[in-house]
Amino acid sequence: MTNGKEATLHHRILSDIEGRIVSGEWPPGYRLPFEVDLAVQYGCSRMTANKVLTHLARAGLIERRKKSGSFVAQPATQAAVLEIHSIEAEVRSLKLPYSYRLEKRFQREASPIDRQHLELSGAASVLDLVCLHHAGERPFCLEERLINLATVPEATGEDFSKSAPGTWLISQIPWSTAEHRIYALSADAQVSKTLDIPRGAACLVIERRTWGSNGPVTFVRFTYPGDRHALVARFTPGGES
Amino acid sequence: MTNGKEATLHHRILSDIEGRIVSGEWPPGYRLPFEVDLAVQYGCSRMTANKVLTHLARAGLIERRKKSGSFVAQPATQAAVLEIHSIEAEVRSLKLPYSYRLEKRFQREASPIDRQHLELSGAASVLDLVCLHHAGERPFCLEERLINLATVPEATGEDFSKSAPGTWLISQIPWSTAEHRIYALSADAQVSKTLDIPRGAACLVIERRTWGSNGPVTFVRFTYPGDRHALVARFTPGGES
DNA sequence: CGAATTATTATGTATATACATGTTCCTCCA
DNA sequence: TGGAGGAACATGTATATACATAATAATTCG
Picture (cartoon, rainbow over the protein chains, first blue to last red):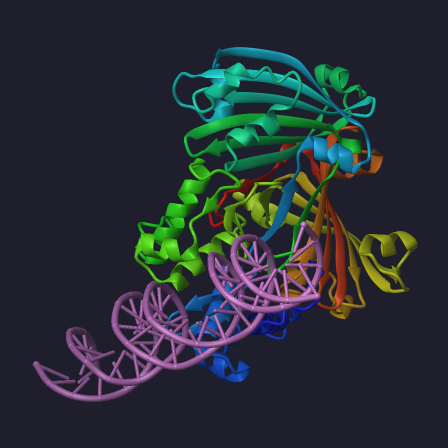
């Protein structure tokens, strides 16, 4: 990862061009040399140059147009990568003992609000869970979750009293599409009591909607005491780390 | 973009394999067929199969090990992509009139706190800006910014009274690395007055540190009234949109 | 029997080649 | 003059080939 030096031709050319772009030597809109010219310049075949340019295009650094050539792209919207770990991992990275408790567990027909959260159109059964994650003695995060039993019927047989539903779900639906909404909220009576924070204290709320290949899987809202937690997102031009 | 159908061999193979992985047919840890076998199976050359697997590896769906083969990866940490637009674009997407006002502008030697924010070790001059972004009549976002004059000396000549420093900086340093910290905070006296919200109201705070190829560029803190703003982040297994 | 050596295997990188495809530009003819 | 048609061009995709590299399996020898 420290990347002592990947001395392949591919990497050399790639990082050279990348360097020229991020340094501003080749500003947005600049037309870079044609594939054949790059090939001559770096003493490689066109295929290799093509691969590098394809790579850069996929990374969003350049745009390619037939006949016209390849151009340095305009960095339109900053796209930062938000890594979302499991809560247990988060707590442990703070070097605090982690514990988990299931507060409530209902199985019921989806209410209109449930259907809205899960983006369901018709009737469906859902599992409604409320869990509390602790870091040491103090509550760390409140988790309110809906599981769509149409796509994850196996959830009926799980009681989630010992381990959090998030980790169990990943074993069931390993690869899923997700959409997150992040906002701030003042703790109401319920939240302030559950999280043991003053009423009105700022909380960071993360809502996540998850889809598998068979449709909506789960909706979850994490509520964190705002002064005890922060999300971190990163962006590097080339991608990679 | 709607992707009517990219009927290239590459795309066919790619989406086929991707489908098997996200559907769970090939679960995490599963060893997929060797390149030569895939080549036979799809009636293509090994080079083409290799390209597809390389693509999948870059997208993080598989891991490759020499001699052993390629394996479906464990989706360790959910990595969602957070698209951060300019504030003007944000406001306009809400169909509200946007306006901008510069509140303060200082040039000074970096204080210890400035240096900490910009991750500077030695002495340096900085530009300290406070701006207010409005949506319609109401304050939408408070921007507190430090600009490192060592890397962006041109900023001295800009007064930022008409347009926000963010957009100007992008024209100076188009490609930059950035790190974001997102958290919730209760409005103190200062913030509540500036944003015209009750004291103690929850705010969403986004701090961004930016580096160019010549070092630290800027540090900025955006403070949003929490009930009026949310961030959205997405994740799709293959990447792409 | 066990350690060192060698062979095998699958991926990694690079090249030369071929043809397809979408643009642009130029030419030629009505 | 203007527009249809085609040549030129740059990228896109695919193949066959070659050799490098890393990891494992097999073999050899002290």
